Length: 142
Image 1 (spheres, rainbow, N blue to C red):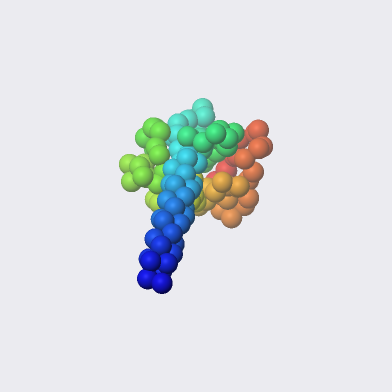
Image 2 (image 1 turned 30 degrees about the horizontal axis):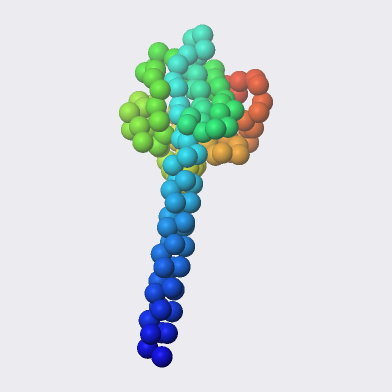
């Protein structure tokens, strides 16, 4: 009777460890293989331009250009930044919130009073939804 119990415990232990390993492997895949958000700050003529894109993902189709018609490009230093990790290096931009539990996650920041909310399915600019698949730039006029 005792041998039967020990063998059952051993089988349950092995099955439990196997399930745990599969769970951990799946979770690692979800957390690392889906890419991250990147913002490139530059100019579109005299105006400030942000290019937001999803980097490191197999989809690669998520990319939008936002042009701020009321903000001069010379007021904000240009560069390319990984969000949210390098957000503190972006001069003039304040990170308000982020949740990257499941990559690429959701990142929210403010630029000159405009709130930009980046999600995998949509971008919200001052609460107005903008899709990823629209080819024309998003123009914000102050």
